[in-house]
Length: 178
Image 1 (cartoon, rainbow, N blue to C red):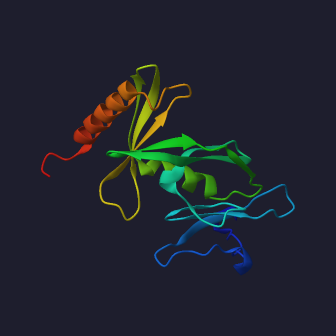
Image 2 (image 1 turned 135 degrees about the vertical axis):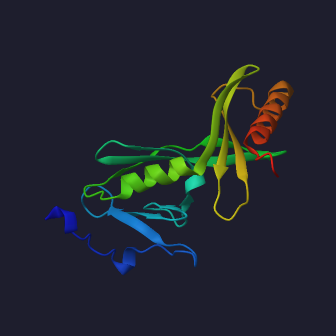
């Protein structure tokens, strides 16, 4: 009987302001059981309680499902360099989902699907992760670097090596017939 159980419709008051080309995939009530809001997954990203804008799938550094709680770690652009963005982790946000439905699956599939390339590299005085992400409406990959804590990000040797690593990743992921 549970096979055909339909999820109740999202109340119109809780519906986020979707863009014209955006469609809702699934949703779940979030909070401490007192109706703190809803988490809505769309084809373009994740709408979280307390936020006035969508978090694009490519803006989520990490999402973890514990079986009851969805933990989302957004990324924030620190600076733009020649050919890539430097991104830092924001504080993790946790949402208790008592009836999660398909939401954890959609979040995992969409965040994972946005990552086309990822590789961790040693750098002078530290390390960092080079990531190529698919961004809706953007041709090709958007390149991002997440430096490990303590890495001297403004050091000239780090910047030079990072630029070389991003260029090598870009070359390795560009089809030969282009």
